[in-house]
Image 1 (spheres, rainbow, N blue to C red):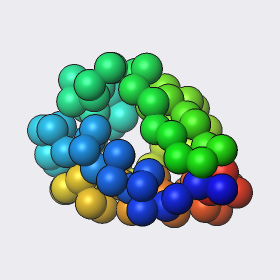
Image 2 (cartoon, helix red, strand yellow):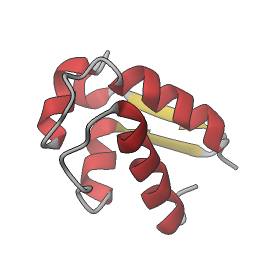
Image 3 (cartoon, rainbow, N blue to C red):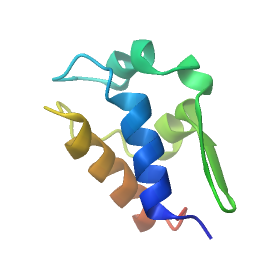
Amino acid sequence: MADEAELREQMTEAFEGADYPISSPMDLVPALPNGPGTTFESGDFSMTAMELNTKLSGGDFPYDDVDSFVDDVIEQLKDQDHI
């Protein structure tokens, strides 16, 4: 079982370096430590940034800060029973 707080922390650290506001997923790529291959893992959950982009609905861009973006990602992961 994935730990939501752990995933939230990993995603915040990975995405906080983006130049906010962001208007598309491509705005996040330069901030990622391993680019699109950056992996988020907790328990039995493991997904790269690229996989997140393909599995989620695309988000509600633009996002003004990292917290609102990560909140939306986590909510979508929960809605789709990934976590």
